[in-house]
Image (cartoon, rainbow, N blue to C red; front, side, top):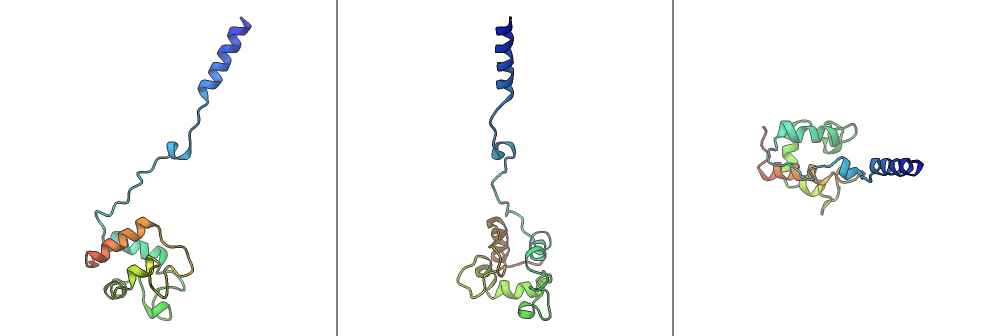
Length: 122
């Protein structure tokens, strides 16, 4: 009887244990949805989080005196071809965000899509 109880106890413990990693427990879609990219809903929040911050692109006295929380100022660098190389850390004298790691690929893809669509103010 003790042997059966021991075997059942071992089976119970082993069946309760399993090896799961974070990817299995918290799956992500792994995709970046760029199907709908708008200035107000997508681009402005990115700019407010990464660019229009203290000491950067916030207007007078800041980098290039441009305020990226305003469409008109962001449209200047989108139209002159400086925005994409800067965020892709490409052939530019000043990769952005300055002195910080490059933005994640999905964020960059959203900005690139917006620029390629003609940087609409929507």
